[in-house]
Amino acid sequence: MRMPSHLARPSALVVAVATAVLLLAAPAAQADDDGWQPYHGQDYDAPAGTLCPFHLYITDVLDQEETRTVARYPDGSPAQVLWRGPLILRYTNLDTGAQATRDQSGDATEYRLPDGSTVWDVPKDSHISAKIHPGNPYHAAGDYVFSGGAVLLVHPGGQVQVLAQNRVENLCETLA
Image (tube, rainbow, N blue to C red):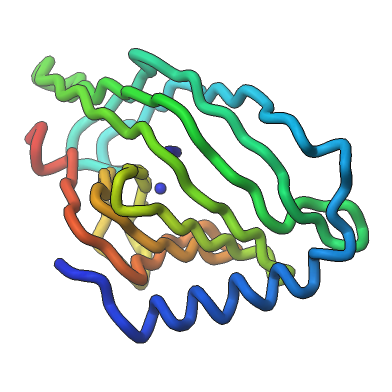
């Protein structure tokens, strides 16, 4: 999906936030969102210093992701979105030519909060990647792949905060 052991306190926070979103959004759920919609990400070009110390290019090898909105706010905007499907990305260090291919297939639930932040809840059998830019107050810069479960909070300004993780790989370190 395109974002140490689980931490008990953040997991409780996520459950509380998710419950609040569902309580607020449940009356606005719409029947026209029964179907899954294809989602295709775009290649990502990160010049040196924007994610990694080197120029990083990310492209799809396989992208058959789908999304489904299952709850909406009263104004019609999505409150809870399900993600599923295969996603394999190739990461290339354009300075050296080094490459790594990572399977990021699986499922995720995205909770879009009223303040503009987003919580991503990824089950243990799934993967998600997150691009964390320099200056993020919550985490070191890099392009991370989280596997075996994760909970990420993306603040309105785009800063990623890792609330829970199992296995993590920083592709900037892998490809250095």
